[in-house]
Length: 235
Image (cartoon, rainbow, N blue to C red):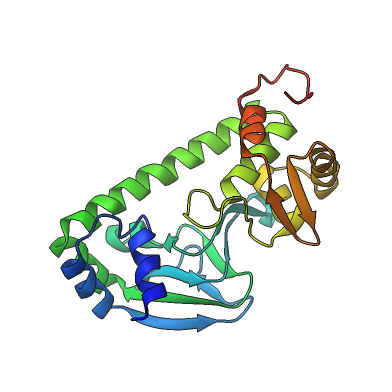
């Protein structure tokens, strides 16, 4: 296993805090695969046969809404894991996972991963922590869709997409463009374009052509904390 993959695993939430000996055992059990753009890692409702860890590329997690509409849940990136909760619970996949660009993953069969979680206590604890984190995200997003104005939702989407939490270079975003941000913030691409243009003039974000860079994360965070009835002027 090359050094870059070792570093990715050590930084991922799924394998955080696991000792080197146990981590070596986990890595030995892993398999490897490349994916082209548009390939699917999992299908909603199908059996969760594998647990994946993203090594490169970006992936869209989506589910079906009413009348066949597609709801974007999250954009996953390097270091993110997919399917660990469903695999351990023996439950069907909760969402469809699609590669947005060519990518690379490590993966474990569900039965293998279940045995690893049994043998390595920290891995099992990390799975619980991830399940709680995902549950909190769902609740927060539901509250936002009911209560937050559109600027707060867009700011939250940008913060979620920023690489700060994943340990990568601060400010870098997935190359999803306005459409992906609109899907995450439950609004239209036209509204996203208007708000992003305003924030570019204010020096909060920069970029274009399908990639945005967050320049002032603190001001975005301020927008998410502002009251809904507060004027949209920036601090």
